[in-house]
Length: 270
Image (tube, rainbow, N blue to C red; front, side, top):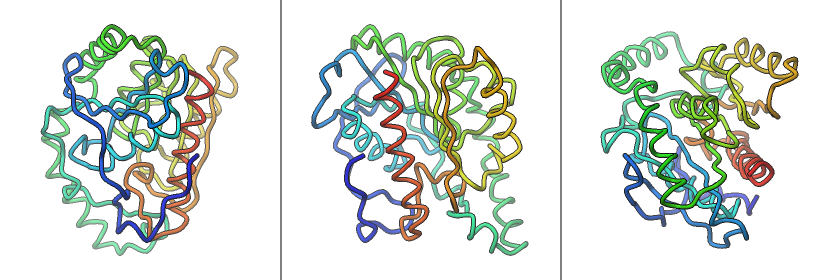
């Protein structure tokens, strides 16, 4: 991976830098396109698609992450706007930014944050990820046709992991990376077909240690399972791969390593 990001350049969960990509309509979605500064030789026939968390393109980190990954991998990264300009605001959901922070929360703080989550339930119901599957397939088809993409890798962050797994299970993509995935059952993970990398938070109420262990055991034991790799990052909480707290050195290093592993995985399997 490229040089580590300077912790002094950022506050809270903001990745440093400004987006430098462009927006273009691809299939059913307006899409942020991050082009690498130094494309690899076969870049024109390869693509990476980033399926975001519930904050979509409204979260600037999701654009800057695409720029960083494009530069490190040498492959163009596409970030479709799954929510048609109406994602959740990052102010709507406040989660702990590390395991230590989660463990230090008071009972009343946990109750307060839980009550806030209730307010976003109508949005989640309207935007349940299975409702995005058909359009995500159309997006991949358009990417292959309009951008001449022959090999496509997909990343799923939290919510986006559901879409990523669906596309993988239907052989629409060629490699996958799942960052602190959510809204997936054990049986859905069993449908994975292509090489899949897991970047896991130490503390995660969605991809819990129990579920993570079940998925890893199944993939390790199943002879027909695709290539796979798991890593749990110390002191990280769900969301660290796209909303890292750079003031916490462990979380910052976890973010940087997860990004580097993602680039390595796609360079190895696309």
